[in-house]
Image: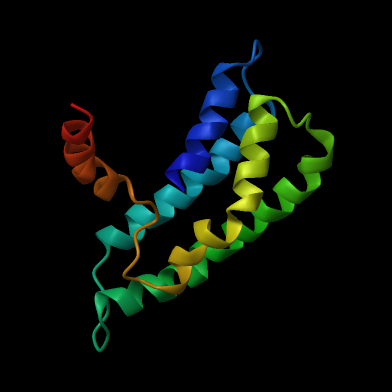
Length: 129
């Protein structure tokens, strides 16, 4: 999810005018990350594991936002020039949709894998040297 968000952030930086479609997409992503923080801050109810609580919370709160984002992407995709940063961001997000939304089905999965990538960067950087 972080990569898809980053592509829209890059598209926003490349625009002369702030706002527009990249800013709208970032609002969706910010809302998803806010929901994720809220879910992590709340403790699971009695009788369930943290993973089952996260799954239920995501199903209730994140899925409607993801559905709205998907509908928005489907609507805007034909209107965007493919060889632009915004076009790249939209096509990447749509092409990776199945993988980007998989986290709502399993409470054990994080919304993105930034922590893992940061941990393995040490090994990859050492390998290049």
